[in-house]
Amino acid sequence: MANHSLREAVVAYRRAPGLGLLSATSIGLSLFVLGTFGIVTYNVDVTLRAIERRVEVVAYLRDDITAAQLEVLQSDVRSYPEVEGVVHVSKFEAMRNAMQQLNEFRDVFTDLEMNPLPASIEVRLKPDFRNPQSVEHVAQLIDLYPFVEDVRYGREWVNKIYQLRRLGGAIAAILGVAFAVVAILIIGTTVRMAVLARREEIAVMRLVGATDGFIRRPFLLEGFFTGLAGGFLALLLTYAAYQVVDGSLIDLEWLPTIWAAAGTLAGGLIGLFASAYALRRHLMTYA
Image (cartoon, one colour):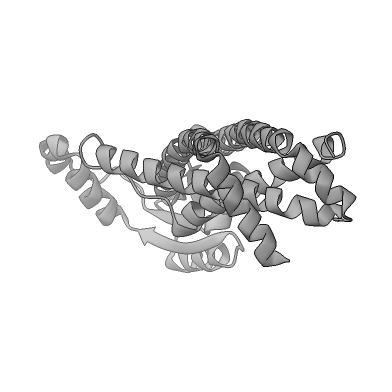
């Protein structure tokens, strides 16, 4: 049974190779556009994650804070479920860092009679708690301590990073659905044309007692293989575009293997779904 279905699917390609090639190419181009957008989306996400790893809460301490109070503060903050680590920056370290980062003001810092920079603690957050709500919550808790002068975490900056990630995910989902619909329409049209071309053969098979499943299987396999070929073509085109752009214009990261495999398989599944949909609507009519 399975061998018969596979053989019939191969025969269908031999009967109309141009139609199958055109369908696979159309699907491949549709998925290629999605693949190139996927590379852009993935690299934007990689960049945003790298920036997101730098999200931290900085608490500036009063000059009269005692060692015991500092120890209590660090111990309490480390116990927060959102916190990954706490680093104490002394007044001396703050001045040294400022001189290294603002080298053009080195002479100004050197001429100062006293160090005006406060000591601080830098609070790193766990990956799942770098969203605006968690960052603000931690900042508010730290700000309650009387020996904390001020708390900063770049509210607008954190909000923009979070919004950009959400926007990128939403656009990727919308485009993915749009191109999937286009591919389904293309494969569905191909299958309907195949059903029309073989309607007499299907009618004969019905007369000799062939079941609907027996008749459908070759068409479903044909749609799956067409979609799979389109997905593989899209993968090759996407990788070629990546090689052209990477290094010559900007440095890019290639898609994760699971993304590439899922995109190729998605082409086959789209083909299978489109074939099933087309057969459901037209098989009975031309039987």
